[in-house]
Length: 268
Image (cartoon, rainbow, N blue to C red; front, side, top):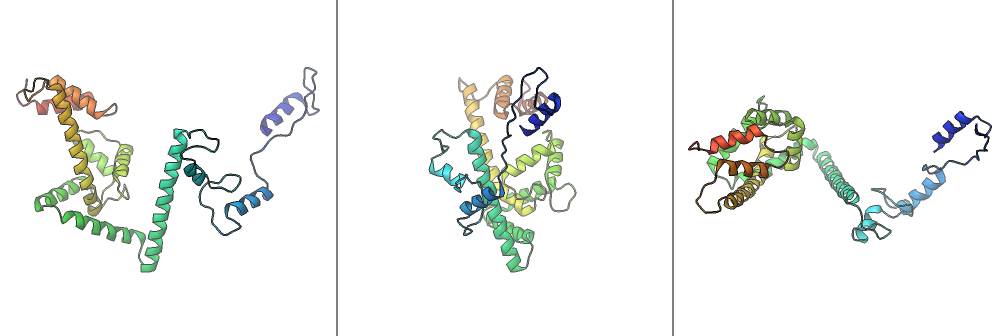
C-alpha cells in the first residue's frame, strides 16, 4: 500500500492534488511489521515470561496455533472447519517437528558416544536389517543381494536416485531422477542418495506387502473381466486392467503393449 501511495504521489505531484482538480486526501499506510514493543510483548507471552522456548506458530495472545487447532477439533478459532490446506500445513509441521526432534536426539547421542550421526544411523540400520534377515531364507537373502547389486551401478556399495532412475529406465520403465527421489522418499529410506544394503533390506517387508496388495487388486480386476469364469481374459481386457491399475501417470502405450505381448503366451 505504501508503495502504491508513493507511485500515486509521483504521478499526481507532491502537493497532494490530482491532475483533474480533485483533492487527494493523504492516508497513512498500514503495515504488517510489528514494533519492537509489540515483539517484546509477544515474546513474553509466547515464552511465558522466558520460561519456555519458542517452537512453532503463535497467535497474537501468545497461544500456540497448533494447540488451538487440536483443542478445537480441527476447527479454526472462529468455529469454521479448517481448510484442507491448513490441515496439510499442520500435518507437515508435525512431520518436520518430529524429524527435528529425532535429529536432535541423534546428534546428542553421537556427541556422547564420540561418533558421527551417520555412523550411529548405519549401526541402527544394521541392527534392523539383521532382524529382518533372520526371518528370511538363504535363497531370499541371495536374491536381495543380487537386486541390490543390480542398482549399484558404480559398485561403491551404495546407490541413490540417479542409479535407481537409470536402472528402472534400462528395464523399460522410464523414470526421471525426480520421480525416483519421490519413490524412494515415500518408501521410507533415510537418505535417497545414499542407500546401503541394510537400508535396502528394510524396504523388503514394505515391498512384499505392496506386492501382495497389487496381486489382490489384479486378481479382483481379472475376475471382473472373466465374467464366465473360464480362467482367462482377452488381450484387450488385460490392456484395460493395466491402464486402470497404473493410473493416469502410469504405463504408456508402448509399455502396455510390451506387457500384453509377454502375457500372451499363445499369441492370440
